[in-house]
Each structure stands twice: as C-alpha cells, then as structure tokens.
Image (cartoon, rainbow, N blue to C red; front, side, top):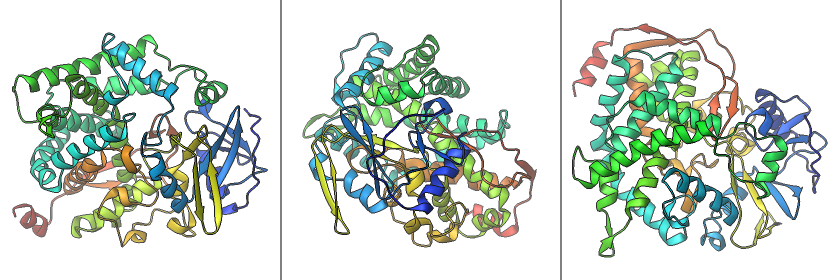
Amino acid sequence: MSANIKMERAVHNPGIWDNICDFGKKLGGTPKTAQLLLGDPDLLAIVPKTCSVEPITEVAMPGRTFHIINDPVLQKEIMRCPRNDKEGMFFSPDEELRIIQLFKTVFNDMELDRNDLIFTCEKEQAELFHTFFRKVLSNKIIDQLRDSISAIVNKTLNNGLKGDLYQTCKVYASSVISEIFLDYRGDSEEITHAVSKLLSESIKGITLTGRLKMLAVETGLATSEPTLDALKVLKTAASEACEKAQNSEGSPSIIKEMLDFEYAGKKAFSEKQVQIMALTLLIAGQDTAATSLYYLLIKLAQHPEYAEGIRQDSDQFMRCFVEALRMCPPAYFVYRQPADAVSITIDDRNYHIGKTDFIETCPYLTARHPSIAGDNPDEFDPARHDKIPSRLTGLPWLPFGTGLNKCVGWYLAKTEVELFVRELLQRFELSTEFEGEPRKKGKFTTVIADEIDIELKARRPSPEEVHQSKK
C-alpha cells in the first residue's frame, strides 16, 4: 500500500524518524514507511522514507497544507494560541456538521447546533463545561468518590475476570462511567459491547483514500446498521440516566449535578446538552481508560519490581502511570483546523499555519521526543518522571489535549486507574512470559491489538499492608 503524498519540506531528525518507523512497523507497516494518519492498516497514510520529521512537517493536500507537529514546545504553543480560542482550533465546520448529523440521527432528529457538543462548542460554552467539571470533579469531590469507585473495583474483581484481563478493564471503565457519572445501574457488559461495536464499525471500510478525502472534507461519516444499533443501546442508557436525574431518583450523579448546575443566575445546560454529554461520556470513557489501565498492568507484570514499589511507595504509582501514558497515550493523534491563521516563532524559526490548513499533533511521537524521552524512548522507565506536574494536563506530550477542548476525563483518570491497580496488586502477584512492547492499534483511540497472557497468582498482604488498609 502506498500513497503519493508530496512533502513540501525535507527535514532531518533521524531519531524521530526511527520512532515513526518503529510505530509504523507495530501498526503493520515496513521499515521504509511511516504511518502518520494513524488507525487500522487501511486508515493509514504512508509517507516515503525519503523524508523525516523535525518540529513541523508539511504535507501537501488539495487546497491546503497538513502540518504534522511533534516538537513539545511548538505543539503546546500552537494548540494554546489565543488567536484560535474562538473555536478551540478544533473541527472544521463541515466536520462539525457530520458529527451533529450523527447525533441527530441517534436522537430522532432532535434539533442540535455546535454548542450542544462539548468538543465543537464556542469559547464561552467550552469554558462553561470546564467550569462545571472543575467544580464537580475537584480534588475534594474526587476524594469523596473514592469509596464509590473502590466498590466498583471490588465488584469487578469479585465477579471474576470476564474473558481476558483487557475485557475486564473495559467492563470496569464502563462501570465507572455508568455508575459514577450517570447513576446508571444497567448491564455494564452490554454497554462495553456496544461501545466496542461502535468504535469498530465506525471505521470499517474507510480506505486510505477515503481517510484522506474525509480529512479534506469531501465525504461524510458512515452510519452503518451495526453502528446505529450500538448507538441505540448507548442512547437508551443515557436517556434513562437523564430521566432518572430529572425526577430526582436514585443516587447523586454527575449528570444530575449537570442538570441542576446554575451559572450567572440561570440553568447552565439544556436537557439535550446533558443527554449528549451522557452519551459522549459512555463512548469516550471506555477504551481510553481501559487501554491505559491494561497497558500499565502489562508493564507491571513484566517488571514485578515496579509492582512491589507501588505496594510500598505511595509516589511510585504516579511515576508508573505517567510513564504508561507516555508509552501508550490514549489519544495517539489530534487534528485541528485553526479559526485564524497562526504565525509562531520558536528558537528564531517562524512557523506559519494558514486558516484552511490542518494541524496534526501526535502525542505518541511527541512523548518520544528527545527532550522528553532522552535516548531510551521505547524503554519503560518510571524514574524519568521524578518531577510530575500537579495536573495531568501539564504533561508536555499532552495526552489529554490542552486548552478549551482538553479531555474532561483527565479529572478522574488517575483515581480510576490507581484504585484498580492498588486493589489488584494487593490481591495478586502479576507475571507474564511476554517480552517487549505490545502491538498497538489505532482506532479512534489507541488500543492494544493482541491479548497478552498475564498470570495472576493470589498473594497474602503483608502485616504492614493490612495495617495500612485499616487506617
């Protein structure tokens, strides 16, 4: 498979290029190709090895330029550029229309506009969403939620492993979203299956040419029957949760808080905004959290010394978690279209991005930049993170994005993964015969392509651990 893509600028950074090639091989490419528009093999753009990548690479497309950025400083400057706060440097208007049409189909032609969707809304609406999430998911509230999340951890583990460990991680992630965010007590496995089906079906049949056309805003988003069936399951769960919250039934939930949230003396969110947020959380909260958790468990099985370190040292978990986010960021690429042209000067070099251009940032590549990973980018080394930002959004490779459209999941991600890992490590010793790096696959998020056999051997907590757990 090949593609005739002209590179406007020849560049020279062999280290970064090698990382691209390594990632390309893991996703089904060859040493002479790199996949920069990442996804399943038929979703990938192949770029010939006659070019490599420096802070910014320009790929010519019909009527516009596609900028691929891997330098952490440049990426952050462009993503947070104030001149693009108006629309958050996110989807083009045509892309928004396709997404809005998809949601209208799901919600039986409900009238929607861009401000009803958190990931396409205007600046004021985006700030309102984040004001709400900062309030309801503050450190104090997260601490109060720990008992509820711990109960989900125990329920998940006590029910036994559902298939492989990856599937258990997915069911757990779905349960956290369903119960904590929505107070939905339905079948988490049904939700898990629906999300998996949706993410698989939504990208079926999209060829390399189709992917490039989609980026060039020439085709629409497919809505196959299996896709709509999966969305119907998720819509039912979201609608039931919202109806229960409106009637003040059940336990407190983030959706109920959202319905009741007031700003400037009036209700901040409409019923349809809350319904769409509920559906979005169900879709976006599963594979992202599950893959980060599963990848970390693979590495702890490969490195039992790190697992023991987590048991003994309260700070060791965070170092391991951040390193897992570096090695396997849940969002492997993010693309934007600026609301206005951008010119940024860094290290005496000027970079210009036109209003009609596309911008691609790739956390997978950025996290392997020498300024972050040194000379061992593919080694799992938690010690490199002795100094960790107070917020996960401060990590330089931007695994949760940044600015107005950063992922709201970052507020809960650390607690959700930590409680599961700590409980699992108290119950079991982890080991695996698998060596090296698991093969990754790109769908809408990074996923682990193959099941990794992880042995769980029951263990007895030490007296110190028993004493600590009683505190």
